[in-house]
Each structure stands twice: as C-alpha cells, then as structure tokens.
Image (cartoon, rainbow over all chains, first blue to last red; front, side, top):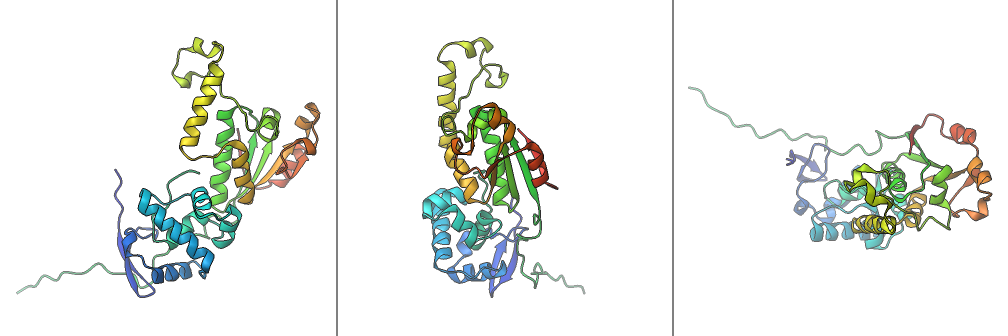
Length: 109
Length: 176
C-alpha cells in the first residue's frame, strides 16, 4: 500500500495538489494553461511537438491509469526517442509526466 | 475566554517544483556486458536505458560472450537455458532434456514482450537514440576474428580494455 502525501502549491495562478517532489496528485486539476506554467517552471517553452507528446501522455494515463514510459510515448505518439530527449532534455519521461500533470512513471523501460 | 483558531495549511509562496537537473549532472555509468545469454543481456540494457532516462552518461563495453549482443548473426536470437540455474524452480535434470532450452527461451521472450520491453536489437537502438555509447572489446574481436564491419552498426568502435577504462574515468561501473 502506498499513500501519497499531498500538499498544495500555486503555479502560474493555479493552486493544485502536489506530492513532496511537486508532481500533481490529481491529474484532473490540470488544464493546458497549467501545462504551460509547469513547463515554464522547468525551463521548457512548449511548442506543437511538446503538446502532441503531452496530449498522448494524458490520453494514455486516462486509458491505463499509469504514466507512460519513454518507450511507450515514443511508439504511441510516434515521436523518435532522440527527439523526446531534445524536447524534454535530461530526464524526458519524468519531465513529460510532470508537465502533463501525471505521477512519476513507474515502469522500467 | 479562549477561541480556537483553525489554521489552513500554509501554502508555500515558492512553488514546489521537482529538481530535475540538480542531482545527476556529471554522473557517469560504465556497464561491461560479458554474457551472451538472453537473461543476462537484459540487466545491462535495462540499467543503461534507465540511467540515460535519468540524464546519466552511459558507456557500454561488450566483451567475451557479450559480443553476441552486438553480433548481427546472433543478437536477435540469444538463448536462455535452465541448465545450472536453480532460480527457475524446476527439477535440475529437466534443463538437459532436448528442446528444453528452446522452450525456456520462448517462454522468457514472451514474458519480456508482454511487458512491452523490446528485443535486444531494438533495445540497443533505443539506447543509441537516448545518447548511449557502445563499444566493442578489442581482444574479443581478435579472438573471434571479427572487425567493425561484422558488428552491429551502432557500435562506435572496437577499443582496448585500457581505452575503455580511460574513457570512463570517474564513472560508476557495473560488470554483468
């Protein structure tokens, strides 16, 4: 059993529930404007390619109840892995989940 | 008279944001892959992929039996055997029965595919695309009379053990 400790934080005028690290705990509190604000917090200015990836991640989460891994995003959104590293540098899977208002991905691959 | 005040939890004025770029900047991982069986190929691939996804620089060195992981002749067809492996929880003698290795390999492949984990060649592609560096061992190449043209084309070069040690100065190291 896991319990997620949730607190609130205000980002870009939105007050949302987040875990200790700052990932949203309720994906329903997300909207595209908040996505822009979250991206800005981690130094990313969203373009159309980012938005495609975010949309896929959210749709996949809705369907499966789990944040997608990088491989899943790549095959599902049809974006090469290399491009994902360019769009969300450093830790792409975690950054995608963060901007999409989803929990940290738990899959290994 | 006393009054009880109920305090709302204080919301930080600074937003809580994950520190994505602090922890692992400059971290390096070196992985030596020395085995050519299906079950021993995956740990290195999974850890390399995980490290790259965390922003860690990764160098992989394929040596001895690990050469099968980067030899186009064998890399898509690595085998898993129960022989000498008590962790399959099957009677030890079964492993030697003809056809058992093929069956065990088939089972393992299926379990891996069910988790949406790619086969070895595709996994190496993904590691390359994520920025991983792949190196082949000079001595193993000489022993097997193989040159760079005989190896999977994602390999950056055939280098000596000392070159690999030099390249991975300061890295954490995994031997598999």
